Structures are given as C-alpha cells and as structure tokens.
Image (cartoon, rainbow, N blue to C red):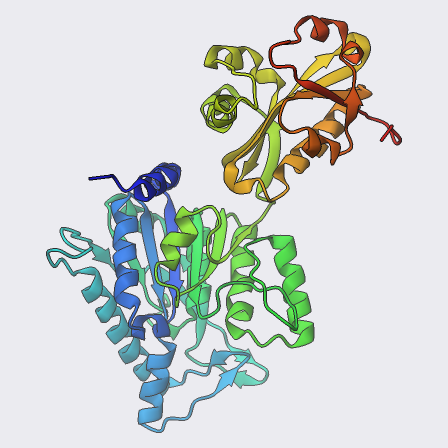
Length: 449
C-alpha cells in the first residue's frame, strides 16, 4: 500500500503555521446569517480544530436576520440610521430574544462530541459574560438611536483569564452599561475593539464576498493582501464610485482600524467556501483578503536562526547541480553575506553577496526562490535589492557564475564576461569541472547590453 504523498506534503507544509499560531489569540466574527447557513456545522468543526491546536479563540456573533425575522413577525417598525438599527425599548426585547437563541445554538454546536465525528472528544468549554461595557450612541442625523450602543470598554483581563484556562470566549452583539442597561451593538464594533484590547494576532470577519475585490467593471479580482494605506485608498474609491459590496464596506473600515491599533493581521473571507477559515490561515495563498499595517514582504540580513530555512531553499537546487553544495558549517561561517526575502514571516528566497573591494566588485551567489513563488517575480525583486545594496556600498560591478540559468540573468541586464574579467581571488577559486558561465552587470546608469 502506497502512502498518500499529497497528504504528507500538505501536513508538513502546515507545520510552521501550527507552531506559529500556538497560544495566539484569534478573534473570529460572523453574522447571524452564518449561523443559519447549513455549512455552520462544518465551521464549528473548524473552530474545534483551531482550539485543539492551542489557538485561543474569541468568537463574536451577530443576529441581524434573526432579529429582523422576529420584528417582522410582530409587524414592528424597522428603521435604520447610517446602517445602525434604531432600537427602542420594545425592539430591545426582540433583540435580546434573538441574540439569546443564536448564542444558545452556537453553544450547543460547540458542545457536540459524537463519536466518529470531527467533534469527538472535543470537550470545548465555552464562556460568555459581561465582558463588554457599552454606552448609547445617542442622536444621529436628528434621530435618537435609544438602546443602540457602542463599545465603551472591554474587560481584557477577564477575557485573558478565560483564554488562559483553555476556554473559548463567545461574545454576542450585546453590551451592558454601569447603570445596568442593555444595549444593542454591532458585531463588527465588538470584534474590532476586543481584538484591539487583547492585541490579538488575528481578527477574522466571515462575510458573503470572498474578500476585498479590485474595482474593475468587467471582472472582479480578489486582492489577497492589502496594507492599511492601500485599504484606505480602496475605501475612498469605492465610496466615491458607489461600489455595491455592502459587506466589504461594512467590515473593511473596522479591519483597518484594528490593524492601525495593534492587531497583527485582519482577514476578510467568505463563509460560503467550505473550509475557508482553514484555507486562509494555513496556506500561503489563502482564499480571502489579508490586511496588515505594513507590507508583508521584507528583505533583510540573514541570521543564524535562518540557516534551516535557507538550507530548505538551496538543497533541491544543489541536488540538481544548479548550485554549488554548501554545508551547514559553511553557511554558519558565511551567514553575514546572505540576505533573505520574508513574506508574512516565512523565508521564501535567499541570495548572497560576496565582496571583492580591491576591484570594486561583488559576486551574486546562491540565489534560490521557493518553488511556489518562482513565477511571482521574487527573484527579480531580490536581485534589484542586492544591486541597490551593492551600489550603496560603493561597488560598481556585479557578477554571477551559473551553469543552468544563463538566459534568466541575460533577461535581467547581465551580459557575458570572460573568466579573466573575474576578480583575481575569484579566478583562483573557479571550478573547471562545473565550467560555469560568467555574467556581469555594471552598477551605473548605463552598461553594455
């Protein structure tokens, strides 16, 4: 019987995420429509999986469609101001009833433990409580919203205490005032403020759309990564053009605010995709949009701790004869010459610069890119950075020796050179068995083609 190599490869690929996410706080927000969806059971299974991996979960749920249904059933007037419900004393009773039912259903789902199911032996402990202190929003556009409120304060220490005990914290869209009143809040307000107060690693909004889509008339393209700055630009254009995607216009501002105030990552993903939560969190590409305060891609000086990741990049190329074999000991000695390109805390490319100051030249060596990223222009990005770095150090010539990638370097402005054009110390180290071709590039405004 042959082993399932796809499963083995996948399981090894998610290991870094499992290690990275353990004991981290994730705030996951979803509306009442998600709870009513038939896929909600599968989503609960995914919550269980995250909890079993040591992720500290705070779940924030809404109940808008359930509230609407109760109000309509009793022919109660429904009115909104700037997307916020006007909650009078009678409407508040319907809100409490609907929220209570939704919360009870979620708790029941999280309590499942049937044998031969993903929830077998789960034993998830769910905790709810008065963790959210609220205040009334007041009068908006001349209309008193009455019992519609907003977050005043989050009892972060109490939530941290519950999470440390291994409990899943479940928050509804209700908040309580010091005077004993109950207020109807939006789930996005609570989710963002809780994530900020806890300094959560991730804030996830489950919505109808797949994420933030590029504003194109002919076809929408999912934007998988945005910085806060890019997100604000998107919102400005979307608002001005009357973009009809209500979900994104609702959740994105809160995601941006959370990232600006200390939340590491915010994600907007579709609840219609089965397993979307796992695909977004445990795969490099994801299936939704991820928002960060700063760009995810960073080029930096390599450190000793990076050697394992560098070896994983270069060993396949060494085995195929593209790169000269380097031992771990040699890498440790030469780590100061290496630069790595990190994407979302994962090293996906590396290269080394070896200086020859007497001849104002640098050798570009050991360029390696993760196989999944070789069509994404990562190699060119790293070379451009190293060229600029060499210029700043006062070098005016960059050369490379290669056996298999000559045309790739030709396409990037390098041109053939003779062996005797190498710096003299490098000529003495030339391996005549490999018979590498020499290419170089002049680091000035103009150079030979």
